[in-house]
Length: 195
Image (cartoon, rainbow, N blue to C red; front, side, top):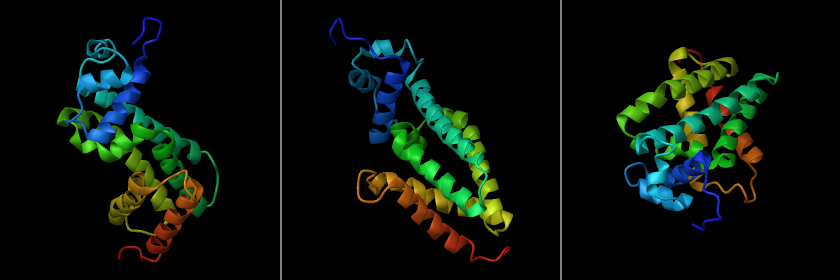
């Protein structure tokens, strides 16, 4: 790093860490690699974060914050229940592709984190999932016991797209959101309550 180059701030370190955690998982990622990606010395990371665990928790905090904010923004728009679900699916996909590794870390690297990091993040993730359960309860005719499973099926459809979808390809995120929502609603709405 040149003497005139400005060292990245906390957010720059977070971005480099998020990319590494997504690409390699928690265990295979070192503070030295994150520092190299950030253009700083490894010891400088500790000016911003107490430990690698603290750094990963901060990445996950940022990712879930982005998802919750996107969900809440859509929640302010009054629409039919089907259109509201479509808007939420689009918002969730947007967090995965427009906020990159912070949200993708929840999909690809969360379960590689130490237990204490997961325990810190799980309550916030649970809150996000409860928002989706309420949304699904308003949208489809499903028994309460089915809502978590239906939410997981929908999340699986949305989250798996980070493995194969090219947002610069022929299909747009809006089109992808419409396809996922249509497939979900056609299957979920056909189920009888309590079945």
